[in-house]
Amino acid sequence: MQLLTSAQLGYDATPVLRDVTLSVAPGDKVVLLGRSGAGKSTLLAALHQALLAQGRRVALMPQDHALVPQLSALRNVLMGRLDDHGAFYNLTTLIRPRRRDRQHALAILAQVGLTAEADRPVESLSGGQKQRVALARALFRGGDVLLGDEPLSAVDPAQAEHLARLLRQAFPTAILAMHDLDTARSFGTRLIGLRQGQIRIDGPIDAVWDRVEALYAR
Ligand SMILES: Nc1ncnc2c1ncn2[C@@H]1O[C@H](COP(=O)(O)OP(=O)(O)OP(=O)(O)O)[C@@H](O)[C@H]1O
Image (cartoon, rainbow, N blue to C red; front, top):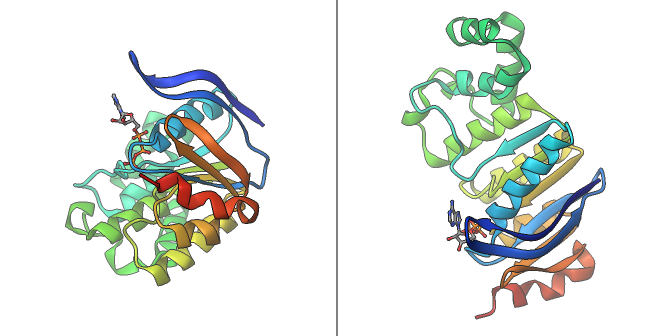
């Protein structure tokens, strides 16, 4: 799918990335790498818009998780499908979830190791637990494409491997911004590297891996 052709991406008068041309093939597991501020989140936001404009179903994991702190982990997961239903269904889901939705959401919370936390308000959870709630919400939502902004940054390495596997199985196509190179290497089939306002690397991960260090050079 051809997703983006843009001379410039940025905010108002401030360009962040230029000459962006990007297509993604179904099955691609893209890892987006680059120094802090290189434009990974900016590119993900533009991809999100482009995918929605194409009518694709997208699961989005933003960097700040966008969870509702006062609501339970379970209810935050259920919110992953709010836009599938009308206002009445959603209101009743938040008050008293339907049995089928609840069981499905609880099964996903079990997969991410949060059974005991299902009824706890998200504001009382640790950073890694919050991230797993956001991940469970994305899995509950499902979709053609997962877009994630450092979706595994707050979990420990053993969990990261397990959770990365769940994401790979659930989403045919994924584009994830990442900081941890080991996780990126094991997750990705394709690497896109950003540096100095441009896409500098785009290729199969094994073929371009020896160029990764240059993305971070000062
Ligand atoms: N809402 C905004 N308004 C103006 N400038 C922004 C905004 N968001 C980000 N920027 C700027 O755009 C540039 C790229 O930011 P972006 O968040 O895309 O980088 P990133 O690669 O995701 O960084 P990180 O790894 O730290 O999350 C930065 O210089 C940042 O200051």
